[in-house]
Image (cartoon, rainbow, N blue to C red; front, side, top):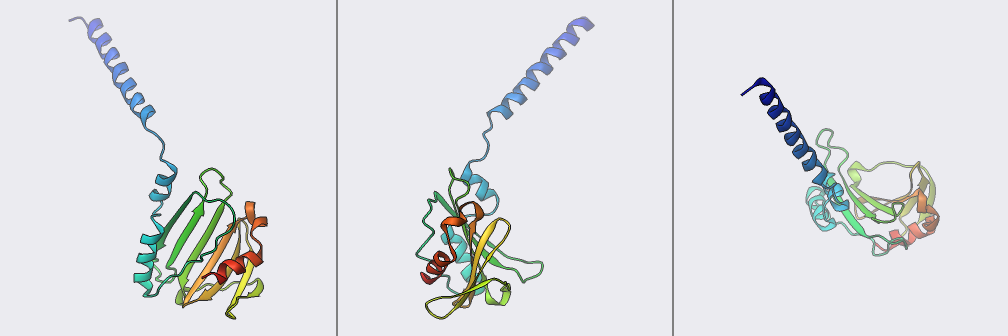
Length: 174
């Protein structure tokens, strides 16, 4: 075989190989909405609650009332701070796949890992004190109940629909 034919065959082989590789990448689909959360460690709320309850040896009660904005999904994850052993928490997210602003979150931690906040003070039905404050991306309501600290948060884009009084109603529903 002449050098010209061998060179031509190598050239054609390279084109075929690289077009197959490019085709393989073109056919891979980006992760779904659910897969993105799963890749970040989120799972079902029930499974994450079980992990957290086992870790802190305490029952978790969730509010029966949620903000009156539509959610399509709920995810949760238990985050264990193995390095400092001081920031273990349960993160629960209510989100809407189609309306990105609809985010409501509940972060729960043991009172031994509680955080301190400053803000406007409110009183729940049982006399528990709560604190409402605004942050860069979320407005929050923090309170303690059943040896746990709860931090409810609503994304700023829909915060006008969840007032401090509504946060109090949500907290009272636990």
